[in-house]
Image (tube, rainbow, N blue to C red; front, side, top):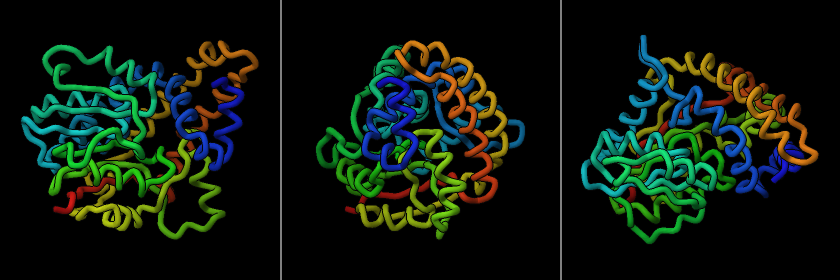
Length: 298
């Protein structure tokens, strides 16, 4: 996909939804090298304890999810939307489990496969696949987790139902994601949420208050739903995101310019707008970073 087409498709929620696989793949193909400069191999926000640095906060969050899931050595786990495999490697090392990571972005799957070797790497598998069409049989995994990835699926209920299908009865589904506030007017959604979705190539986010019902209707018993700021400080994310956004915007010019007829300035502008859009929407309570702990029904 050339950047001119990408910029046209991300302009509307319909374009992002109808062409989500290609749009998300292109977005991460462009930003992954630059994101690694700040985020290393874990592309997600976190809550921070006092004095924590980014990678420590990310590991703390990943371990929190693993602990809530009850993941242990010998478990077969599924990471839905695995990025370039940082969380999968950390969870595998922490728990002793084997982890299969699925990602709709072929570029990131190839990067993940090249990065994770050694003893932990023998317990990692990375597969290009759609979260709404998981290529696995019923009850194939002991547990499933997802970190800031299912927001990219156009149909969240279908994605949750796919997880319910492949996890064993009683197996945990734990995760974290981005949501919007409940009962937003169309005008407020357009003002606060749509700019963030457009900048990050997200089709649409669901209300935070609807998460429990979505999980229950997909086949889960929900143990808890909470916000990041119930667990720690989210403010350090904004400084780190700003650094990442600036670096990515400056670094994508060469990649974008490789396409005939591309508009690197427009793509840079979109990236530069991403952090302020997310930061302001979160500070105003219009976008919510939340997490859940649920288990498949027996």
